[in-house]
Amino acid sequence: DSEVQAAHVTKEAVLAEHRSAQRRREQLTAEVRSQTSETEALQDEHRGLEGKARALQHELSKAVYTVGQRDQELKVKNSELHEVRQSLTCIQDEMDEVNRQLKEQCNRVQRVEGSVRLS
Image 1 (cartoon, rainbow, N blue to C red):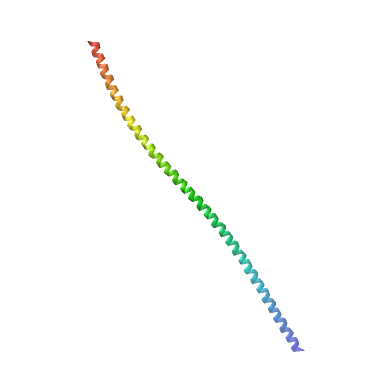
Image 2 (cartoon, rainbow, N blue to C red):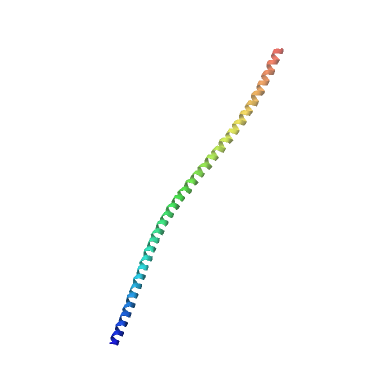
């Protein structure tokens, strides 16, 4: 009778340990599922961020290209403007020379007129 009771107590203890181990396995399985799910979510987020980074890099490359083009256009326009300024300076110098010559001619004409009046 006491052996049966001892066997029964032992059996209950083993069953309790078995249930406890089963619960622990279920907890660990749930943790693994949770961590797997979290890992997959982080991988999805990472892929999304990589896509955004590539899109931003592409935008940046386009912007850098556009700025480079505009910079080149500005250099060409500055060069053209420099040429125009040089041409204007040459024209101004020529006009100054023509004005000087005209003044000399006017002075000569005035002297001649003065000589003609006196004679």
